[in-house]
Length: 130
Image (cartoon, rainbow, N blue to C red):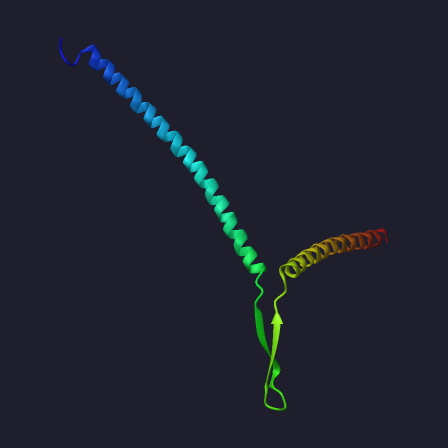
């Protein structure tokens, strides 16, 4: 018997090819799942970092020093005013009020435009009747 045609060798080669394909498929599945999980981890991590940065920005509670227009009083002493930044709740309330005001102004603008269009249409209709 020749070594190339040996049934045992053929079985081993076939088993080897099967294992290679199984390993390739397993690695591909692992790579796909790692890719999906990696993207999810990046999105979650980015959201956490963004949330933390927003929290830090909104919750800063540092004191600022501002000088009056007249830096010295009559006795030659410097006038210094300490002002605290607004709290997180105050900032959030202010932002919500700003957004509500912008929304209401846009609604009012739309209503005014509709009113003016109707007025001009009425005037045009009256002008055509004469």
